[in-house]
Length: 312
Ligand code: C5P
Image 1 (tube, rainbow, N blue to C red):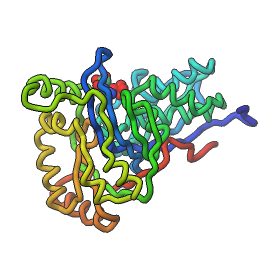
Image 2: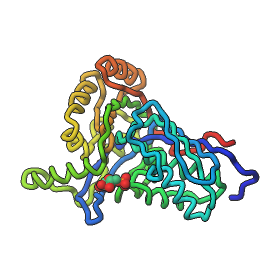
Image 3: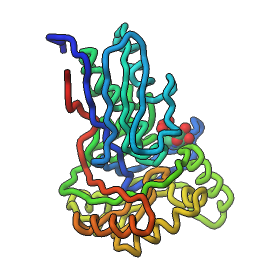
Image 4: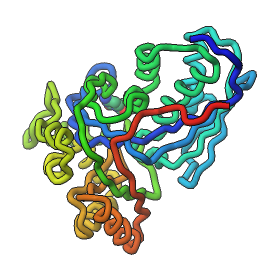
């Protein structure tokens, strides 16, 4: 693809994700776990603007706790931009401005969404015209969730979570997110699961060698049926997340008491995603959780992945 005129800025929407099902296999020699997950991209988005620059930089703003977001070259969005430049031979840089709404280290793939958005934004800004398959390959190099954040919609992730198969999904699912005032480190949550499994090797089922997404989840997504989905939602990272952050147990109970169909830790947490029967039920749930002192945010899915919304 060749550009007719140079662009000065590109804005991309970067949706967060919920894992509506997450089965974790055994720890492998490379330090990763074999996963089987069902991802859903949701309407809670970061906003990423890429502007032409001679070198690489990032500015981060937003209403969420930004304390844990790196603003140097270790920021995953900057690494994404540098990777695209290196692969395409682009010689300039970019100034990224990220407005965050997806909770930071919250288990909703916020950093991964920003990286996916940076790939899409820089490709459009620089006119490098990289194909979708190649972008997905770069995304997988950046992190296990980045390919899904690029693809969006509803998909099954296997391998590290980066090998995607699209899922037939209908309808819209209404969620209320309980945002925690702290973060959890993904490697720490996986390590807690491994510790638990080795401590209780005699009395719990071993890690599955070939984890699979439950058929009930696929049926519920296909039917757009939140009640059926609520019955089949599982997250193997929930128990270790609750062990590391016990106050989340009270939040889960508060949501279920307030009428959620089901509540589940999102990814490695600490965000908790409550599924509601419909939009009005989600509104009522949000009101009740807020009254109980929980930072409750409504969102829905599925939505498209990282996409350009404005070009100058
Ligand atoms: O791929 P990503 O860099 O996002 O992964 C962060 C960490 O999460 C890894 O270093 C690893 O500890 C853990 N992880 C894992 N198995 C996966 C994906 C992530 O153990 N399939």
